[in-house]
Length: 97
Image 1 (tube, rainbow, N blue to C red):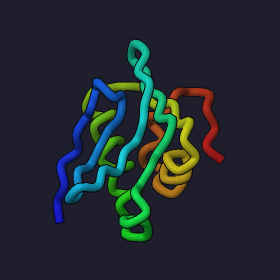
Image 2 (tube, rainbow, N blue to C red):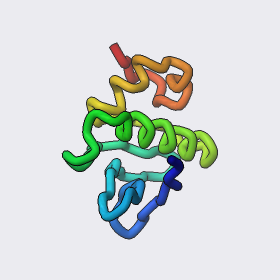
Image 3 (spheres, helix red, strand yellow):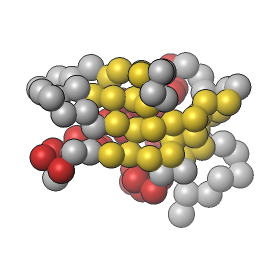
């Protein structure tokens, strides 16, 4: 099941629309940097891989837009730790342990 990623700039969040539910990652953009601050998946969708899918889609968008990532959200940081191919997007000097 495919759900397109929406960059809701008015609310400063990336979203997936799944039926009436909206998993999201909140962000702050400053010049060429994007700070991912919070990931939220509705309880009805937990445990289905939606959060990981959302993070992957957001990272693909960040790469496409050539932004530098500052992962402030622990869920995003853990995803990058598990998928080190995305570390190249992260601001130099930030260590994802």
